[in-house]
Amino acid sequence: MDDNAIDSTPALPVPPNEQMSGEADIAPLRINRTPTGVQAKESHTEADLDDPQLYFNRELSHLQFNIRVLEQALDDAHPLLNRLMFLLIFSSNMDEFFEIRVAGLKHQMALGDDTTAADGRLPKAVLAEISEIAHQQIARQYEILNDTLLPALEAQGLRFRRRDQWTDAQKAWVRDFFDNEIMPVISPIGLDPSHPFPRLVNKSLNFIVELEGKDAFGRAGGMAILPAPRSLPRLMALPKELCA
Image (cartoon, rainbow, N blue to C red; front, side, top):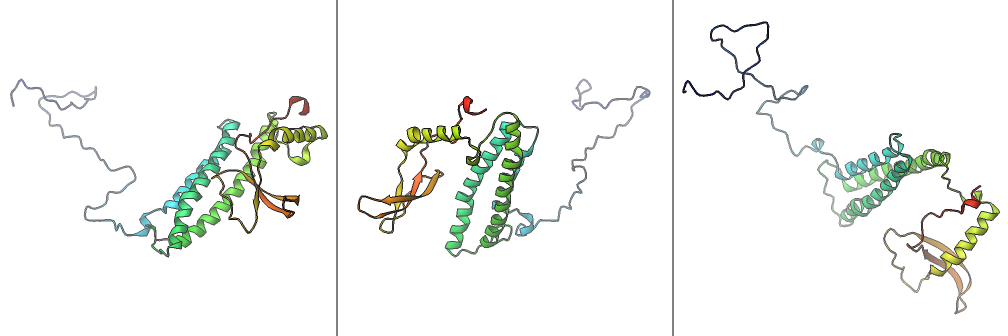
């Protein structure tokens, strides 16, 4: 190498209390790239990619993600209304989970496909575990809503009144609102053996109602489905003068 060439290798810092005399030999700096606390495996060791213990179940892993969303509703670091939103997001996530993941497992079973997942579980076993976890977490969701968030919201002046808590004035206002705003836009769909079950909009809110009296043909009312119009609000605010 030319004596005038510049060595691009950065020099190691020299402690201030030491002086270098002559031409000292400096050993190259070696960096251990193995993460702390992780022992490097020998090069000849290979993982068995068919080992079920190496994999998480896709559906159960997705379900655990939804549970982590639910747990955000218990985090005091979030604003109160945001915690309520996490409950709503959890509901939406669970709807999608059953529509896609659970439906896929049921379709697989209906076809008689007993192929195990990468983690070694059969579809029937996965469905059983999903059912147990989902029932627990849905119950937990209602517990968080009724025992934690609703009391906290009421302390901030936002109250959700149940039917048995309505005053006479509030009952009269609700009846008037129903007659003038809701009744004109609802259409019950009758259920009877001579007609197929009606098609309902996905994720729509529907009620099963019992009809009184007789229809135009003299038949007893029977049962009907009452779809809730999406144009109506899910929550209604009472007038301030009725909230005292």
